[in-house]
Length: 118
Ligand code: 5GP
Ligand code: ZN
Image (cartoon, rainbow, N blue to C red):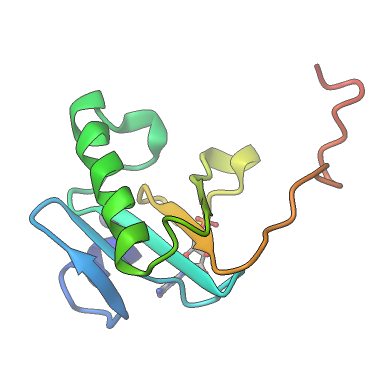
């Protein structure tokens, strides 16, 4: 069973923010922003490549509810899902990073020079 499935089954503790029958949201163990939450489906889905549009529609509402729950919906936030090796996905259970609580930097990724790649 994968790491996040163990969190869903409460075999591994997590600091849970919001949960319903389809999804669970909990604090990232190694936060990269003052607010760093992971939102995941309760069924095991490997990555964004595999989620159905029906479940994604519900996931969208859940992510919006998480942002409201931690009071970042007005100040703003970022939603990221890393997909596969080039995307930097380490845990192979679909998760959306919800980052906020500060003005997040945006710009060129130093390790992905667009010149010559596209
Ligand atoms: P990825 O790199 O796959 O997009 O993101 C995986 C995220 O899971 C990372 O931000 C990492 O800090 C987080 N993470 C890894 N193991 C655990 C854990 O056991 N508990 C929690 N809450 N987060 C974890
Ligand atoms: Zn899983």
